[in-house]
Each structure stands twice: as C-alpha cells, then as structure tokens.
Image 1 (cartoon, rainbow, N blue to C red):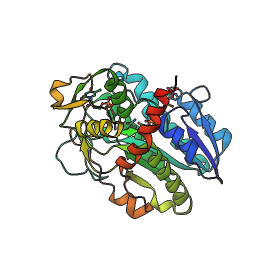
Image 2: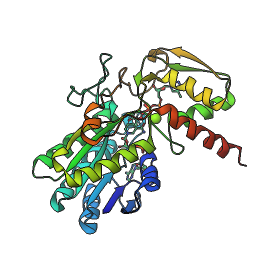
Image 3: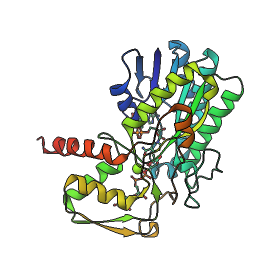
Image 4: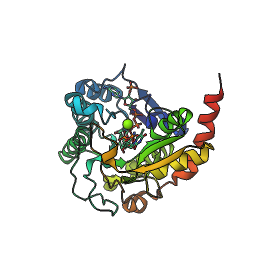
Length: 294
Ligand SMILES: NC(=O)C1=CN([C@@H]2O[C@H](COP(=O)(O)OP(=O)(O)OC[C@H]3O[C@@H](n4cnc5c(N)ncnc54)[C@H](OP(=O)(O)O)[C@@H]3O)[C@@H](O)[C@H]2O)C=CC1
Ligand SMILES: Cc1cn([C@H]2C[C@H](O)[C@@H](COP(=O)(O)OP(=O)(O)O[C@H]3O[C@@H](C)C(=O)[C@@H](O)[C@H]3O)O2)c(=O)[nH]c1=O
Ligand SMILES: [Mg+2]
C-alpha cells in the first residue's frame, strides 16, 4: 500500500516512520517538500504521487503562538487539510486527518462524545475545527474513505511536549506550580501511529467506517498529576504544587475538560485507549539516557 505522510519532524510523523508495517510503501514530506502555508502545493503533491492513503501529521501546534499568528494557523490547520481532502477525493485515496481536544470549550466533567458541541477557546482550536469542517465538507462533496482522529496531550521522546518540558524544568528546580483544574488523557505518539495504521487498513476495506473519532490515553488526569507521575518515573525529587489555571496565565485559554470518549473508536476499529503510564515507563529512561550522553 502506497502511503503519503505530511509532516516529517513532528511527534506523530516520527512515530509513523518507526512503526509503519513492512508492506507499507511510505513517503514522508517535510516542510521543504510540502509547505502547509501553500494549500495548492499540498494538493499537487497528492495528485503527483497518487497514493492509496494520505495521513496529515503536520500542523501549527503552537497553542500560544497561534493567538498572534491566526492567519498562518488557519492556512496550515484548515486551508491545507481541506485542499488535501479534495485531492484525496479526486483520486479515491483514504484520508486520515488528526485533530484535537482543543476544539471543545471544556465544560462539564464527562468525556466528550464525538458528536458533542464544539466551542474552541483559542485560535489554535478554532483553526483545527475549521480544518475538520473543511475535511468534512470535501468528503461530503464526493470524497472517499476518511477519518478525523481527535487526540489530546501528545507526548513522545522527541519534539515539544509536556514530558520533555517537565524533565527540563525539573533539572534546575526543586518545585513547580502546575495547573490542577484541566483534565485530559495524555496520549503516546506511538499509540496514535498504531491507531492510524489500523484505521488506514480498515478504511481501505470498509469505507463505511468513515467519520470523526476520538483517541486519547487513560486514565484521565490533571496536568499536575501527570507532572507528578513524570517526576516519579524519572526518580526526580521535584515537588509539584497544584494551582488553578488563573495562576498560570497564558495567551491562549485551555479547556478545563479535555476528556474524550473513545468508545466508538474501540467499537469500529478494535483500538483500545492506551495506558500512558506504560509509555512513560519506556520513554523516560530513554530521555534520561540521552541527557546523560555528553
Ligand atoms: N502535540 C499535541 O499535544 C497534540 C497534537 N494534536 C494534533 O496531532 C497532530 C500531530 O501533532 P504533533 O506530532 O504533536 O505535532 P508536532 O508539533 O510535534 O509537529 C508539527 C509538525 O508539523 C509541521 N509543520 C508545521 N507547520 C508546517 C508548515 N507550514 N508546513 C509543513 N509542515 C509544517 C512541523 O514541521 P517543522 O518541524 O518543519 O516545523 C512538524 O513536523 C497535529 O494535527 C496536532 O494538531 C492533537 C492533540 C494534541
Ligand atoms: C510548563 C508549565 C505548564 N503548565 C500548564 C500550562 C498548560 O495549561 C498545561 C500544559 O502545557 P503545554 O504548553 O504542554 O500545553 P499545550 O501546548 O496547551 O498542549 C496542547 O497542545 C496542543 C497542540 C493540543 O492539541 C492539546 O491537546 C495539548 O496537548 O500545563 C503549568 O501549569 N506549569 C508549568 O510549569
Ligand atoms: Mg505547547
């Protein structure tokens, strides 16, 4: 199966590169080959390669930076995914697009169903929701098999993520203040890659499974609890103090409830929520070993 991935350096893209099955002929396009500020270039790459499956693992993920760079965030997170979806529709390719818990406003404390009302609190979330809408519109207008996979709180041993931020700060601090009123499911990038691989194969054979799905890690925790788990696994004596979001001001507001109901993903594709604690136990020793290397 011929697979084209947008994004090369990102957490999910890297995980896809290491986990793709042997029978996948996978090409990854970095920013130098396909810049997502240029929707026509993204569509042209798909038309030229004619893959069976396209996975969009590139995005403008700077949540705070997006607040003062909305035009770029919209081009990258909405216009280009829309153009990719239309190009996939033209050639009947399976299209997998990744979205986020930040499309929700975070009200309540129940896990969000896939059909729950959206209401992004910031520019990043709005741009990702516009991307979902663009993909859905393209597919409605005669698209092929597709899925929008909303995930949350992604971490891995590379890139910018909360685990690496905590380990970096913990090296020079004996205590940290971390928000304890935002709840979600930390999700290993490796598990997202495995989910995308399973979904691509399933959608290729069963296009009727197309739709919007949720996939995030279990159990649900606050960022503060996640931070304590990180320092615990790392064996670092850093005190984590619970604070309300109001005491950690950021340009973008974040949802208080990022819990995602992943039941339909399990039912359709047999993919269960990954336990983030197992992934932490793998990733942290590797990160500490990297640090120890001069
Ligand atoms: N990170 C998270 O916590 C979460 C992420 N998601 C979603 O998951 C997906 C994957 O995220 P993740 O792997 O964490 O992303 P990363 O932030 O790790 O990587 C982003 C990737 O997008 C690429 N990119 C950004 N702008 C452009 C551009 N203009 N042209 C081409 N490439 C570009 C980056 O390339 P470069 O290195 O050149 O900048 C990089 O490869 C995204 O859709 C994201 O919205 C959803 C929920 C949580
Ligand atoms: C570093 C630090 C962060 N925080 C808070 C800020 C924020 O509310 C929370 C997490 O910080 P981050 O900057 O890692 O979070 P953020 O960049 O908002 O992470 C998000 O990225 C995008 C791409 C997504 O799609 C989301 O699912 C989510 O993973 O922790 C503290 O309370 N104390 C600290 O010392
Ligand atoms: Mg961030």
